Length: 188
Image (cartoon, rainbow, N blue to C red; front, top):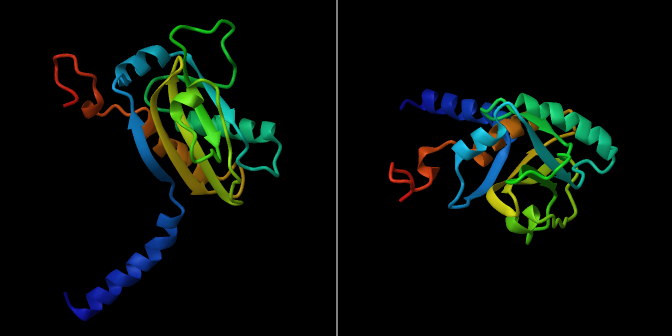
């Protein structure tokens, strides 16, 4: 590669760095052996799907303002089923009880099964960093979990919607590798 091309490639890479630095980061993931995207799809398609928020990613902003700003961002980034995100708990607890729990600035030792049982613990958040621990629950059992973070100035920051778009592809993955063993292929 000629020297001019190397310099041009290096400058292009440096120019793209601020764009990459503002993208969401998705942490490690876990899927329970029972995780099944088909079950999630059947349970949520054309239905309300409860989201539980724990903590406040923007302590200087009223929690209700944050929640009101996050719901449309989640809805715009929703996964494939035609679901409607809601904070409202069902009048009667359904069985199975499917929900998504988002814990902002979670304690590092907080586990997903604890989250599904209603336990939350927090750590000090970093100003300007939107960090969450997402757990998809069925009853008191975690079906999937991951963490995600992005720089964000406030609850209306467009990077948050992009984070949700990437997050939902992971938490609600339809990967064939995650299909339960049922005689038709799937997990090893």
